[in-house]
Structures are given as C-alpha cells and as structure tokens.
Image 1 (tube, rainbow, N blue to C red):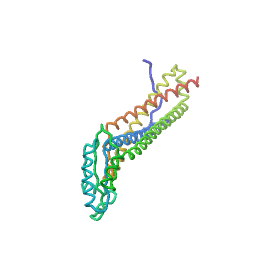
Image 2: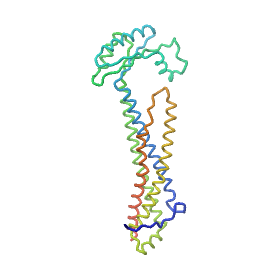
Image 3: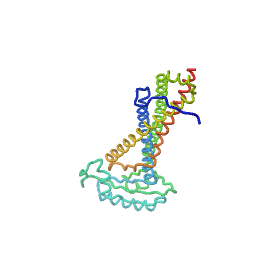
Image 4: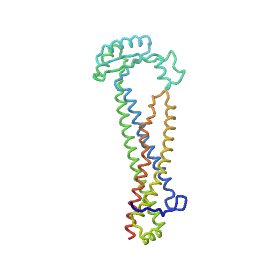
Length: 293
C-alpha cells in the first residue's frame, strides 16, 4: 500500500477551498430538487393515468331536472347492454356537488341551478369501445349527452410530463458541469496557494500520486459533507412544498401519495457528487503537477 499524508490545512483556516463544501451543498440541493420534481410528476401522472384509463365520463345537460334524470336512467340501461362496458354508475347529487364546490364555492349550488347528470363508466381492458359511435347512439336518447374518455387531456399531460422530465435532466447535466468547473477552479487555487509546500514535498521525494491522493481525499470529504447537508435540506423543502400543494389542491384534484421509495433513490446524489469531486480534483492535480515538472 502506498504511503499517504495530508499536508493541506484544515477547513477552518484561510485556504482557497474553504467554501467548496457550501458550493457542493448548493449543487446537491438543486440537483435533488430537479430530480424530486421529475419523480413526483412521473409518479403523480402514473396514478392519475391509471385511475382514468378504462373509464368514460358521460354528461347529460338540460334545464328540466326530471327530464335529465329520466334520460340518465335510460342511458344507463343502454350502456349496460353495450359490449365492452363492465359497469355503469350514476353519480349522486352529493357527489356532483362535491365536484362543483371547488369551482363554484360552498353554498353556491342551489336548487335552481341546472346541474348535469353524470355517469361513471368502466370499460374492459380487452375490449375496444368506439367512443364516436357510442356517443352517436346515445344522442338518439338525449341530444345533450357528451362522452369523454380523458384521452385528449392525458395526451396533453403526457407531453407536459415529458417536457418537465427532459428539462430536469438538462438541469442535472448543467449542475454537474458547473460542479466540475467549481472543483477545477478550487483545486487550481489551492495548488497555487500551496505551491511552495508542493515544491518542498517534491524535493523530499514525494511522488505526484501521493500529492494527488491528499487532494482527492480532502475534496471527496468536501463533496460528501456538503452533499449530505444539501440532501437533507432538499428533502425538507420538497416535503413542505408537497404538503402545501396538497392542501391548496384539496377538492380540486386528487393528489398522489408521497413516493418515499422512489425518493430514496436521490440519497445517492451526495455519493455521486463526492466521487465526481474526488475524480475531478485528482485529474486536475495530476495535470497541474505535470506542468510544474
């Protein structure tokens, strides 16, 4: 095993790299935020998409409530006879009111307000239901019937989710590049600060590998300490934001559960940045020492 020594001063002293742990903390913090946003969006989309796939919403509008109810019952019977449809359920007035209250406000849904009838329809995964043909058939019962399989909404949301995920990936790449630049600058500044010490080490017979090892060990500890701090702060930030969004969106949309298992993958970020810091410092030191010869 090759001998190792640490001629670098401690972090509390006035050295060129004393702010590097703070820089790594910020970089890991931003990286975890980018990764968490991608994970939360992907997880939430999967839950929303799975809950909407294989479901059709049927809406019947009109001014006379008794006519709407009669048409809803007739449409329900017709849908139950349609191949590929497994279940049909008419939403109660309380369920519809609960859906409208976030938009109209509590207490604003009065008896004179024309409330449409809504049916929740489940289709078989093995069957294909022609939505246009089914809607045309149901319009013979009521001209004010509308069908929605949420496909258009899901396609728009899919494009949004992909855009956010690719953007998060681009942000991660830029953060990694910025981190490498910071480490290179810090390493060169530290070597310039300790140039005389390094020259003395060379005169005493110290090899380049030994000097590089001292730098890589120190910089790896910088990256690890800063990374752990950034990870903890990022997790606290993400969880607080998730709870705030969940409280604000209560009643508007169904929020997905917090994906603790997927989020645990982000715990490797401090290790990644520590390894990146160590490798960058080593390569930089070896190149600078080669120029000093």
